[in-house]
Image (tube, rainbow, N blue to C red; front, side):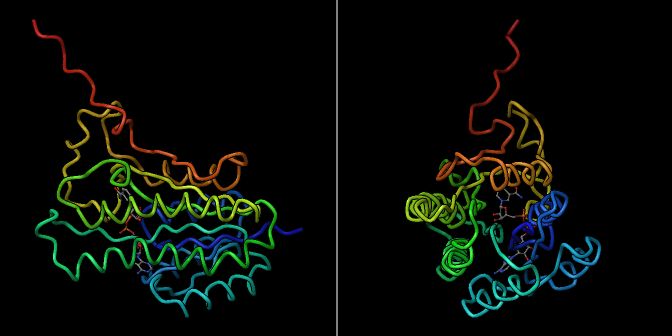
Length: 245
Ligand SMILES: NC(=O)c1ccc[n+]([C@@H]2O[C@H](COP(=O)([O-])OP(=O)(O)OC[C@H]3O[C@@H](n4cnc5c(N)ncnc54)[C@H](O)[C@@H]3O)[C@@H](O)[C@H]2O)c1
């Protein structure tokens, strides 16, 4: 039987594009779903028959239904979903604009839930189906200056656990992946010296997140409802300074 397909949101660039390349490299037919049509089409063309691009705003329910129907038409069965699309907004709790808070929750949380809801009838038909939701280390700790973003990523983590218990009996695993700072357009302009005290003192590469997502989807068959952390040890602790003389 053919390998079931994956849908990767925000798959046109950054971490999402690395996830798409990794899944296609593992032989998984993949639908790249994004707002960035030129980037998405270019990536699909470069990857050949195992990748197609579809325009999707993750907050649009009708758009989700079209993407899932198209994925089934293109590849037969849909067994994997990666809710990766996300936006970052800056602002502490007392300064973030009301509309901006709503927008971040709409894309990062509502869009993730809508994806799960729409995909589940397809995933139920595929033994060993799995969902990965991309959260963040900002969904594991309080994070200064990004209140809406951090709140949305904690909510994605909670949604993941609720979905895991609801969908376990349907043989669908649901996991969250929590990157630290990763070199993508989202963090362009953030100084890499931020990572100076991390056990692995650098920003991560998109491919390092993609490898964990692929593992969670394709190999981690006794894991569900869990957090996979890809942060250079940032949430483990800060390394000790050199001893004083
Ligand atoms: N880069 C990091 O340091 C970092 C750290 C932790 C978590 N993350 C998370 O990883 C995910 C990917 O981030 P990235 O760094 O690759 O960012 P990015 O900005 O490079 O890519 C995000 C992608 O999502 C797409 N997108 C945004 N809104 C969308 C919508 N409404 N519908 C469909 N697609 C939409 C964008 O067009 C873009 O292609 C996000 O969820 C982000 O919060 C990133």
